[in-house]
Length: 466
Ligand code: PA5
Image (cartoon, rainbow, N blue to C red; front, side, top):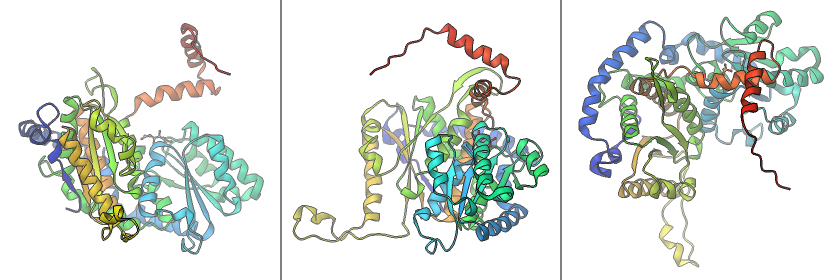
């Protein structure tokens, strides 16, 4: 198995009975696991969980590679307009596999375009990125499964005008719309106005869409070997698609996190010791939070359940958050992601003028970051703090593909344990409706009235200084 999960420090033997998981508890969940696995299999057979099988969709891979080649030949810049699941996976894999790409000159980038993922509607941030791009040399991927997301729609409107002003009627050639195969405004526009487009396969939700054109197209354009990425996921899937809790790392990690949650460890920290894997935590944070944070259980009962994901980066956050993890409330599980090897390593040379530094000579930065992860894990354990380590041989397309699938299956299985629907996100809708109302969208008058009545009920408490 290319990925290992060391959960020694989550167990009672290591951290004591209050926070530690007991073998008996895992054994009990083994029985439930078989039933849940069967339900997952049934849903897969019924075509309700298509994300599992995306890594083997050869037609989609060919379509993406063909389009990527066209884009590479025509443009110097590629900009993703999309948010949430339409953006976070691309950023995570881009930084993992093309670290520093945008800082390189064109020759160092082998002529490949720069990639910017613009998910926010902050006018300052958006303008600065547009300023960096020559409109004639820039392609925009407008990514939205629903086709209605207000942030992505607004970005599209701004960019369409910006391009039209610069390149005239040919502006449509600068867009690729990635959306639902049949429904939504973007699909309508693609069909009617002749924009190039790609489909997000039906039944694949945003945060489970990294292995669709949502992630694959931008990544292929900047030179990621998407076949290797998908092969990594596909080959690893054999470890994830069986019902033995002890040997299925996705099910096991979900079960451990679930049992820890029951013991009051409601915060899950993901802490890779790798700059290249830093943004993986952002992607996972959305996956874990949106999938598991739910008001109602599958039977409609009130639950208000869900672990809170937190991001950290080793070693950086040893100097910011680890004090809290070590001595603060017993409410966290820390999951480290550690590497066996780095693509490059830097030896630590000696410096005779400073004997105090001599202990470092002969070691390397790669060794130091590995030792610091082990030291932090040991110190947490000594303090009775739950932690586990996911270990990869290195950061490659194959290991990243495997890790992405591992986390997706883990999240799905955790949804069943928490007894919530991991594929919906009703809580996000509420805020969206008020936004539509306040932006004057037709048909939202009642929401405007509701918003005003909430405001009227509250006594305003604002402290203004200066
Ligand atoms: O996981 C999800 O479904 C969400 O985070 C969506 O990706 C996000 O809200 C954007 O939606 P859309 O792709 O419809 O624009």
